[in-house]
Image (cartoon, rainbow, N blue to C red):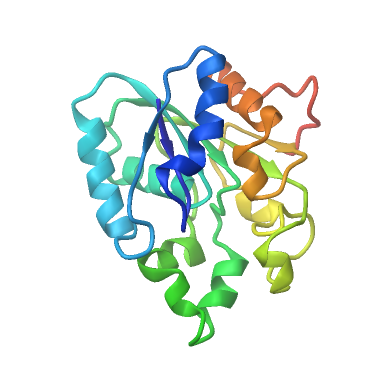
Length: 207
């Protein structure tokens, strides 16, 4: 299993999530990339090469990491990946990214990841099963910028995490950053990776 971090983060950021998934019986490896200066145009081909000749695996991506994972699978659909879990990923595009990109002072913050974060994906029609864990604690930069409407994790709106073609979607009580620390987010991710669906017995379905 490979874990992919989001923008402005390093591999160490996902250590708490990796530890929880390891305790659940998985063997996670955090895969790092330069999210600002390199962006998806470097990260996606590198991820494709990392996965191309390896054994069947799963991907778990936080925020931008989920978009990078799906973009790699869109470009190379035969990669040996079975399931993907996106944690708080703005799959339909990020209002926060659009607000940051609209100002000269803030647009460089997103670097070469700006376009993918701003626009997201139109739909998912790949062969891999994809599930999304979204947060509903509105604490983050998006709320400070008034860039998200309705329910959100403070950075990404819950509506921005929905995408046609997903297998499943669930909400957990966490902020955007808190998703990588949340025991419930890790539990739901593990459940999806095993079963291809989330545990809606303890989480109200959102699709």
